[in-house]
Length: 171
Length: 293
Image (tube, rainbow over all chains, first blue to last red; front, side, top):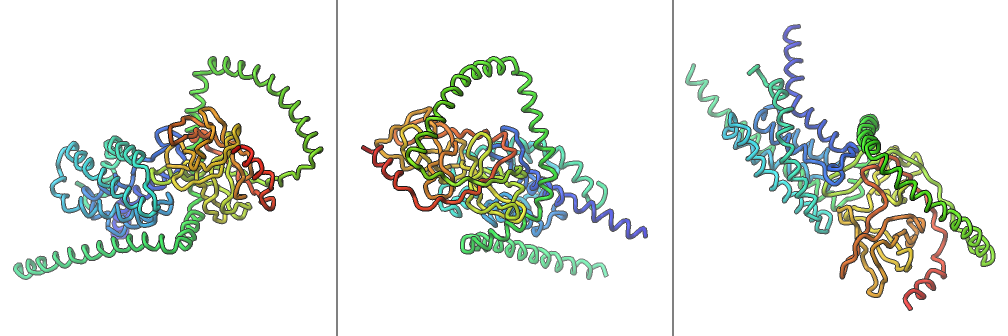
């Protein structure tokens, strides 16, 4: 019985990072009427994948990233596979740098994210333009990149306690 | 014993790393395959998307209500703060509108009389269904909303979508209980419109910005800021004379339009089921030729 409880406890905790990210993908699709949201919604999923790749990689397998990307593509009607590929690339690039980022002050993490986000914007712009067969106006994408960068610290405040909960053993 | 364990570890770690890398490569390939597939088989992907959308729509229907209410609260607050100002401007508008009402009634009678005299064939009445916006793709790549009415309510691909302000867009995909509406500001949106005053026909082309532009405007077109733009009904997809917007700026080679619809307040929309009234009437071509002269 005790073993079972422990297992359930660990499973629920372990599912936190992926669950939160899926919820964010859904939240991004809700009809928010805030003026800033009209044109662009921040790239919630990129923030989440970046954060969990550094702090809870064992709770965020590549398959989850792929699934989340496909889900977002289906919900937001972006070219299918685009977000999946972009998120996988973010994870693939950030994962080897994990040891560099771990334990560093937040400013360093933010700086790292500020390198990743423009690349995400550029890559998405190229892929979506190729898939739509027309140049997607870049300005809204730039706005999205900047907005996502500015909101990143707020999300980290929420992610941090969740990350502690999701840890394999208490830290 | 200890040595053995160490060896196992040394062997196991590269094995796991390899498996991980292999899995990663496979998933990346799968993503690329999906992209190619969505280009090659757009219908299949559309079916998939419609299926997923229909399945998750209860989630959106549930959560979108409070979100809209909260957002509406901000709007309300704004209304209270500027009540006095608004009141004054509304009183002014009211006085103006009363004058116009008298004019409109008179013109209405006159128009009815002329129609009877000329035996004009009336356009078919449109049936409609009103639906709530339950999701908003809101990305910089695509301008689209999801509404909670689908094929079971008579919504079909291609139908025009309006709200009380004017034209919103058209139905891009219709599932059983949900439909996706491509907003007229989207990059892929093309809507046949006409300048109400000069009767110049053109296409309203979206570019993902809040200000779509008029494409293929004739070089001698008389377009100026403030001109009203309405649907022309050409192509038979949309009913004619739906309010679209006002010409906001005219450059040398570009005219942009400010749509009437306030995108921040897009909550309920009406999907029009419009049946094409036969062939394009001859009178339209004559009209066009007349405006060119």
